[in-house]
Length: 402
Ligand SMILES: [Zn+2]
Image (cartoon, rainbow, N blue to C red; front, side, top):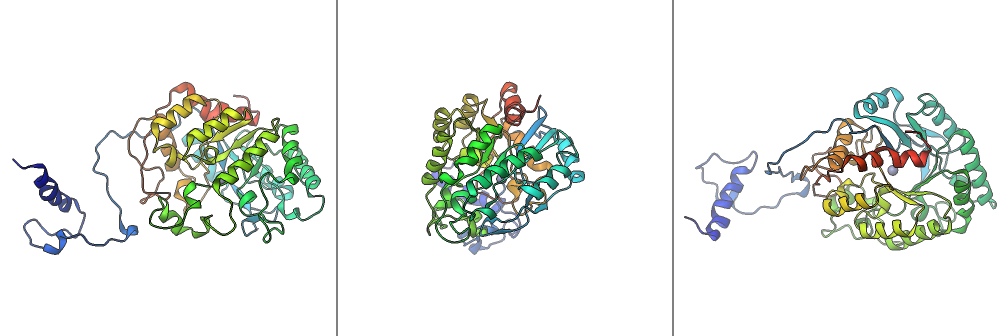
């Protein structure tokens, strides 16, 4: 019989050594150094979970779905985070996308970054018009004309033109609030609720175009990139994603400015992306959903946050089941961002999160969790909620018949 202390310090240590892959001496060999703690680079640490629980593979979504948040095209020229041309980079062809969509039960993809003017027209021709009902494209503000004195009117005309071209909504990247400055790349940051954008929000309301808006970023991006930061590796890999210091507003200031816009334009529908850009605080998102009937959210690139709080997340889905949209942030060939790379594996993870009660699994197809060192739990939604989240809530915003 061993006591607890012996177990902790004796047997436990042996079991730990035996579990180490590679470099472990055959049993009986005496290697006293191996028993001592030794430094290990965080990037070399790839622990294997010893947990043995059922694993379910969900190859196809339970219902045909609309992925409300993808990036099939993007601006061909951006400076200091501001897109400055209507020209598009085409990230994936329909020949590549459609077979994955068919395998995964994706009826349609919403390409949020369709740009405006010529680039928007080309995008709609290549995707939306070539495969009707499979692709929907959103327009974006033309910040390259921001310096023109009549920008508010120019922007309204651009929205009207985009609507005539076939755009299904307006996308706002975090450019607004975090990158766009008075002189585009220099001067003071332009605020999200700057009145020069008011006519644009109103035009969307009048034309019945939903606004997919991304403001701010994970809370950890506003804190120092140090050993206390839960997303240290992610920020270390992408130092330009940090909004800590300099003249950046706080997360709270950004969300407050966004809320003022939503409040000021009650006839405009706002789909606040990435779980209202505050997946770490669902109570806050719920409070805003209660305040603003014209607000919905998508879940793109945030199952990492939702899946660490499966009980709170499930209650959130139950309460707001009519206002949560399925989205992934999927980007064809976006291999450097595994949490949003467009492939079969990514969709299977989302389906597993939404449809099963599996425990402690990876939220991204990657050896090392790319957003933070944790794993997630499924929330096992009932079919009634799945149908709404996968399809109906997005169909309503896009005016698509089911
Ligand atoms: Zn996105």
